[in-house]
Length: 432
Image (cartoon, rainbow, N blue to C red):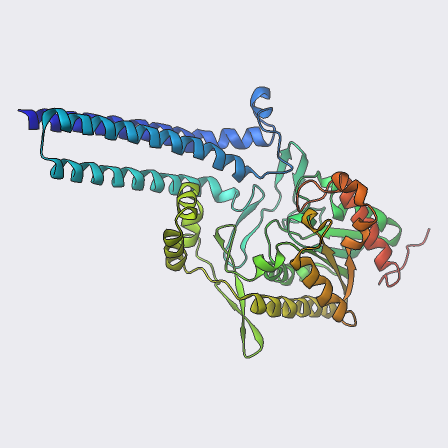
């Protein structure tokens, strides 16, 4: 009689637990993410929009992770209550402990697996137009790429792309062309379309009948920037200049791996002293990309080195050594230069420091400075750190966060680039 009562109670309590967990996560994954996304971009109810005010400093994923952490703790509390209830039932009815615990354990494992699977599946649906951030989609050759003809109204301004995905106007074949390459620093994370580096540089070059196209993509390493340039450089008839903006703090680490921001990306390796592209084409539903959609699993893995190592091994993650990464990066600079020159354009490298480089330079910044100083006969470069040193009292006005620049910071950078290229502008002023 006690066994039958216990089994009935166990079934009811287990069903109740699964219903509660399913309701919590189901509602969040079906509606919560979209609601949070609208609030993040200022398109929800005013009181919800006001709950999020750190967009310039934190991406949408940061707030999603915070919400998921709260839900995870709530789920954990429900599971603990469930266990306490079952253990009390066992103690009161004095039933077979081994059999009951085995059932409880299998129930918990299946519950966790169900939650993780639901999160991954529903997050993949959410990620179709939000692969790395809200203006990118999956790309089998690049990992991710910008979405063409997209318009987003963000709290910090407008984000728009042309028919090729660039954060700039359609290419005008009647104008001299300048390309901006880089990651989120050059792309303009945290500022409006009319406050980006490309916007201010184009304004500076108005008298040269010049258009500046923003081909920077958030999250890219030097390898992805090169591949993106190769894909699109043929669209520019009157290309005169390519400006590669290097984020000194993380460009090396982003380039020396086939996994960036938990997602699969291409990786160049060395073979007999030459570059060889690996990890492409990328499968959209490869294990690495599936794992990237579960912030809960990432949180658990980050606290367990053995699990983290196992997941990386199973997913096929690969990292180059520091020396390999530096060699690969230097060869990629040569490739970018060759690509620009083969289309009649010059290349300018811009070294962009982080806020962490003040007052003492980081090792990453020092490496880029040393490399381009030694290679100055091959590469024209601008060290933005030297400019910012003269504005050390204004760093709060210049940096939005550790990496990205404010409207004012982008204006200063555009001025620095204009002054640098004035001596070798590959095009002349238009007639008045």
